[in-house]
Image 1 (cartoon, rainbow, N blue to C red):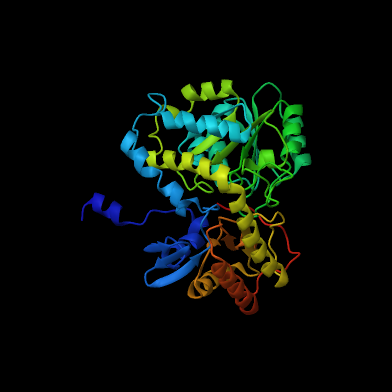
Image 2 (tube, rainbow, N blue to C red; image 1 turned 60 degrees about the vertical axis):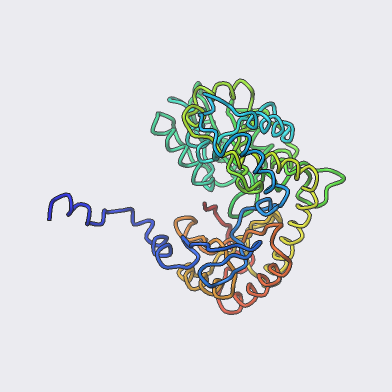
Length: 426
């Protein structure tokens, strides 16, 4: 056996922090699963059909016939993939998307790039720079932390502050030497709790200390929007993000969001000043070097804008009603969920996190597919599962979920209402 063969056959040493998650990935039917077929929000894994409550396609645009039908003409016009980086060439649909998105958000300008992960890892280091400082909410999304860590490796000072803790953030801002760039990174609608911070309060603090507020609203865009006397649900109107939903503005605020959830399309964006957009065109690697989103995604975003304008508020009303039905069941069973917003993300932590495998298999066997929240995706005290409701889930599926949650509560010990707060996972 050669030395090279020996090295290749040995298992490399890895971070033991991920052992729990790796065990689930290797053995659990709801981790790293192969989805063989879908019928609406029913999915088939092997010969087992389940109701899907792990989808983030909140508005059901992935299954909307009008949106699906938009793809053919676009592909025949532009081919399957415009392979230029955006700096080299921009197919007209990119500009059409940015124009319509800017109007929808009520922002000065917008810039679209392939994914939110691309944005965080490229843009956060640019906004801070060597000698700058980045302040990150402890429960901010993992990809924000990735971007902040890259910035730290390039000479940015990295500070953590407690979740939604304006007082601690202000203390850290006061203790930081003036002169360098300052960036505050938070979530909009949190991907585990479904709740959102006070955007206006964070923005006011940013302005007071010469900082920029950077908000990741991946799960809010498309679902929540501006308040209106004519709104069809407490989610508001138009789905134009948590900033508009709370009546805040974009002064000292950069909003990041994506189309991969509510709009079911591979594309992401920043809402930002025009001067910053032009700077990122020569400084942000995804604009300079990355292959763009496929033509089909550009087409479905534009079609999604049309559907959102014509039917979006009606769809959001259905989504709110279905989510409210699930939350009603959770509250009636005396179970704790950190969700106080009514948004369609319902986290249910277990009293004993070690039983996540068993709980997940029980749900799978009962035909319910959810997102397992294992350590280190969440702290050990918050291990459990996340239910994501979409407008495309049928009422029959909602009732099946509610019935199974009742069985689950009778068989397993979940955290009771009134327990400690939850943290955010991936």
